[in-house]
Length: 263
Image (tube, rainbow, N blue to C red; front, top):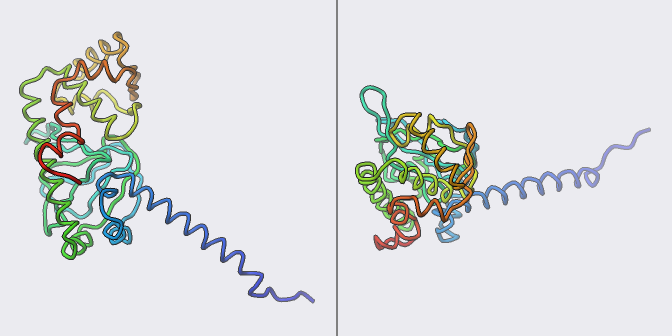
């Protein structure tokens, strides 16, 4: 006669499930802290958000926000990169800003009932922390620290957008490309970038053939290596020398303090 399985025999499995859940929760919590805005929050404030933050993997090209649509979710990149585009009536697009692990997209949705002015897409796929806008608004209403974070980062993003507008008007495509590649590397934490020429042309507002010629020139100089859909930065110092001064101006650790903003 088989003996019934006692609770003591089931306990190890239950403990193992709890351990797995705890490890998963700890891993997600660490992932959230890979975003510098979230990591800058005091532990008690971050704990409020962590109850509702989810970690998601997004593929390149995923649309996060659309012009004129309500902001439903807020995204904090961990390893991916988000591009913000302004669209014209003919369907053309020009990039106005990029957001990586130093920032967030849709953050002003925490102020309540906001709509997106730009198209936001995952330019480089990766891991992102996300939270529903209405939940983020609820937390912001009860936390001066979260509201302060929204206002401070929005100020930094506005300054960057203004600098990019000036950069697009004043600087040649080559220096702008170097600036953009360096920013991508900084904001994703890696020198290997999965980018195709169509995206680069769209971001710079030029033809694909122009991007091809520029990429070839940088490769000949040993500054980068390029094959279809994949760029590797080989000489950051050399790229910085070729980039316009906007790269140095917009470096997050310099731009924010220059505005009197500290996270």
